[in-house]
Image 1 (spheres, helix red, strand yellow):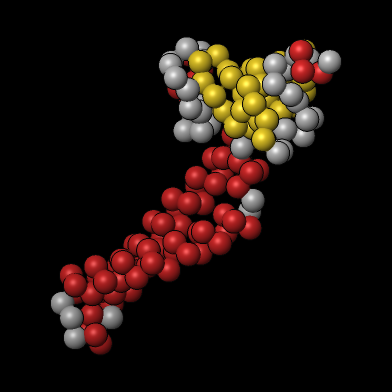
Image 2 (spheres, rainbow, N blue to C red):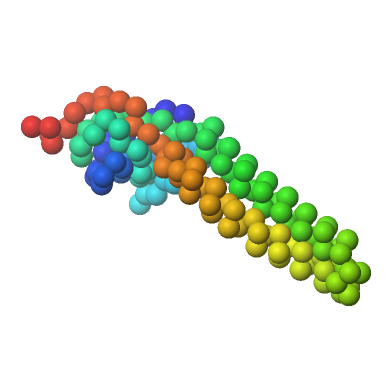
Length: 146
């Protein structure tokens, strides 16, 4: 999804963009990244490869495919690990001398405990910045350019 906005501030290779909210905002995959004082405008942190400065009007793209893929990986890994752990716990209940409900719960917890560190490592190596919106172009330069 492409949108336009105005750069509010720049910090390193990231820029905070003020975007006007529309009806499409509720369907936007980056709505959880958008923060703002009201429903009429939002603020997004975006990667800034064009070195846009405060006051610049910019065209941004929200990487919906990457964002959706990350959510699918996150939730499917948690689901498979928890259900798989619970199932393994139930199967091993006799060996562990526990009731199947207790062993299933223990397996559920151990499955989640194994998945969470893997997910943290995965998302750190996958570079979380790739999930941020990115500035595609500066459509109008602001007063900071001189």
